[in-house]
Length: 193
Image (cartoon, rainbow, N blue to C red; front, top):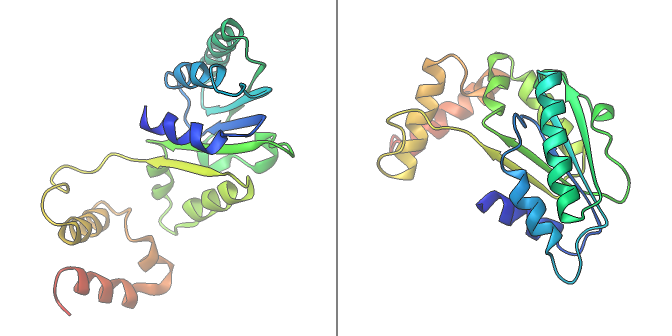
């Protein structure tokens, strides 16, 4: 609900809206957003498009058909565009971003896969891709590791950095050549200044 509310605010006053969902799966959050858009005052958008990224062509086709059925029942002009590819291999031309669209990017529980690349290049490329869509909003969310949620923010952040390093996927800044700065910041966060 909270993510959809943020999208509604980003789309307010815009006639053509485009959601790029980088891990759409069954698209379960979108029917409620479509319903909210259909009842938007003073009027619903003239066109709604969802681009769904995933690894299964059949799952994307099924998701697109379900969402198209929901949109038709609500009287929304709707288009679904499927992109069958790995997150790190998606390119701007695949997303079909069009001039005049208000774009929102949804990447919930997917970006962690980009951290497998120890150089940080995959994450950097992905953020560049998102930037090139000129999205009005980026919705990004990931699970936190167990035990990292307790205590003050500074301590949680330091534990998250340590956990990421232990997992061999964290501290992209350090791997990109700023190891001294990361060590300094880690010391400041844990009171070692």
